[in-house]
Length: 323
Image 1 (tube, rainbow, N blue to C red):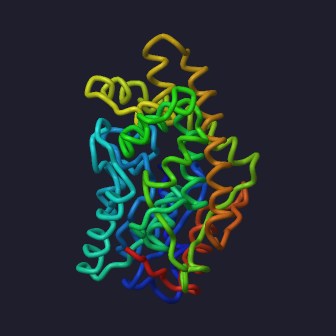
Image 2 (tube, rainbow, N blue to C red; image 1 turned 30 degrees about the horizontal axis):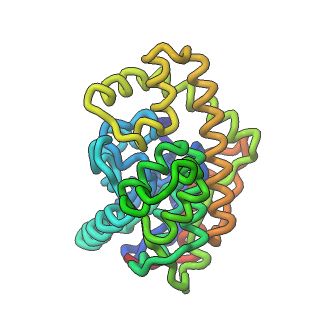
């Protein structure tokens, strides 16, 4: 990842250690570089809000910060569990509580950066243990089907609601909508509180579609060149759960290793799946959160983007996390 100049951050004012500064956007929109540069400059902690980056050994395919970046900034939410383990939104929230406490102990600002809408919404709006269907939850499970396929949804339903899943007919078990309705009722029982003063305090990066498509294709090729196949081979040797094995990048890399795809075909498929995910993420944020969008010009400098994010955070102040 290229370094960014700090000159754009020579602004009046500073981020404070109360609450958190939230940065969202589609996969491939540059959130990590922007968040890292600001965090490095002001000594902030960074909490990742990426549902796949929680798995150990999956750095390349998730575009997670590498060891050099982690030596400069204190990161959280990365490589928390092995890919054979389950990880729920409740697990993430427990981790987030520890992160907030650690940042508070250091008297440091906290930056939350990621594209997993459910993680962001839980952090901002709270997680209620009362069961009940929710439009955001339905959108989340629909997104999971698009990203990981029907088998992953079946595994979730079987794990979270075994008795109810076993009572379904064979046709219902193959029906994504039926499984989503089942999970809405009790698989991950979330309901959202009133967002209150957080309504205008999420900042997002937004690229033109053509530019983002090209960035995602270049990133897919870069992953392959950076050792995605080797990383996937090591993961296969240790074992992966279905969620991890069907993740964008890893599913394709595994097919290459098994002789089902060529590397060029894998890069093309990774790029196309990443683009579908990016569209889903942007749709989610449009409907489920009120985001102050920063439109990134294809020819613009990273300094300009960093300055815009920093200024927006200074003007709006930190968001209150309800964890």
